[in-house]
Length: 128
Image: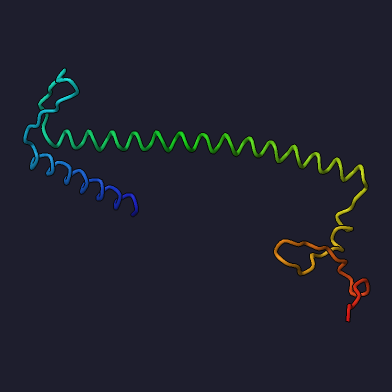
């Protein structure tokens, strides 16, 4: 059913484009810099060419930005893997377990301070 709706929308768009062209068939003369070339063209053709050039330039800019973002993501992925390998190597050298770290929880503190306290209640003391 979705393909029928797309086909109907495409037919409607083509119909609008054709009727626009017949209503705006008056000739306009394009003058380039220094009057090197003057070309008389129908108004609808000038509008369609401007629209097509805008779409193509937008797609080219989008493609360039996507390619640069993919390249950057690939570089960051490689750096991430390298740092994970280094972290695993350091953990194995020091014999540090993830279990030892799970016993520590962050304490409530101000915005510019971070404290780590043991999570067991017996290790904490009251200051009262």
